[in-house]
Amino acid sequence: MHFLAIGECMAELAPSSSAGQFSLGYAGDTFNTAWYLRKLCPAGTVSYFTAVGTDSVSAQMLGTMADAGIDTRHIVRIPGASVGLYLIVLKDGERSFSYWRDTSAARRLAEDETRLATAMEAADVIYFSGITLAIIGAAGRATLLAALRAARAKGKTIAFDPNLRLRLWPGAEEMTAAIMQGAGVSDIVLPSYEDEASFFKDADTEATADRYLQAGAKTVVVKNGPAAVHYRHGAEVGAVAIAPVSDVVDTTAAGDSFNAAFLAGLERGRSLPDCIAVASQVAGLVIRGKGALVPLDLAGIAL
Ligand code: ADP
Image (cartoon, helix red, strand yellow):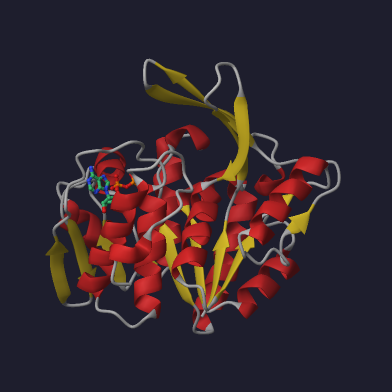
């Protein structure tokens, strides 16, 4: 399999063990999914598509991706631009996030239509998110959605996590309209119920699945924190219970890692309930660790 994720990876400054010190890392929703897929699918190719600058931090980010085994050859480099940054502050055990991403190179990832098409051409499965759609603006969205539509028509599988983040959008109406367009070019939609209920007023997980099936998706998997995952695939309907995790350390990337393990399961030809069961086991490990990219001990998981 050749898997391609499209979106924004940012520099991350996270508090280190000594007070006032921060450590530099790299993370972002679609990148996290690519990183977990790399661990879960050692045999395939995992590519990331974004835009970065030509400065040192951009070069370091690309180096870190390559060291993780992620193919960076399609990534656009924009002279004079740089990557987005976020800072994690810990106060009384609670994490808060501040972002500097308004002028990041990734906002321009859809400007180079040829590179985008070339990256998609090489892929079998293409993954993007509502955050990808949010950061690239209306013109970028038109380009990206057209490219995804064309890729789908050529038989590529398109997977989408709506990842609703209102603060990245001019308003809720623009966000929900664009998310439905994203679902409209996708085969697989992987929403989280809590977000969907607040912005689409879905009464239950079934309503979320219905809405995305009506938009054109073939498979919808509705995550719901520690509650059961509801799925639909044509006439196939079901729910998979989650083993609740009592020692949660940090829920960052729960959904991102779930999506990676789910797609890895599909790639192995597993049934939908099996893919969901494995995905929730992987997400369950990720939320027991600190940060977005948690080293996984997969020994107890039947991948
Ligand atoms: P997101 O990170 O996108 O908000 P969710 O909170 O819905 O996503 O969680 C994604 C997945 O992570 C869930 O489907 C589940 O498998 C796992 N998960 C999240 N919270 C818990 C929890 N408290 N216990 C066990 N699994 C959890």
